[in-house]
Length: 53
View 1 (cartoon, rainbow, N blue to C red):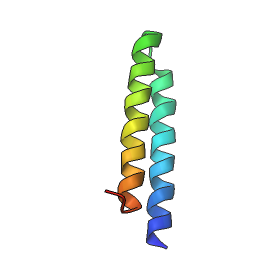
View 2: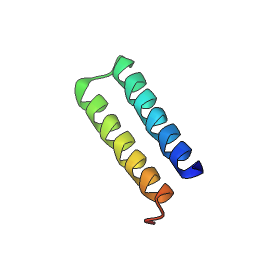
View 3: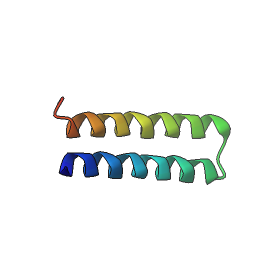
View 4: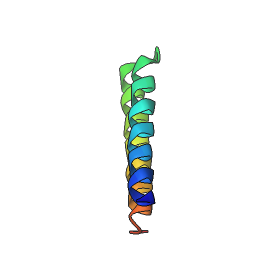
């Protein structure tokens, strides 16, 4: 059950960070790079919780 809660919290944090990045007054190209970095870090976190790494 704790794995499910950890996964849910991770997904919510990733979504919140992506939303906040979209609100930043930055160039579109920089936003895309930051969003890709956040998504990659989020996927790595999810894989860590699933004991893949």
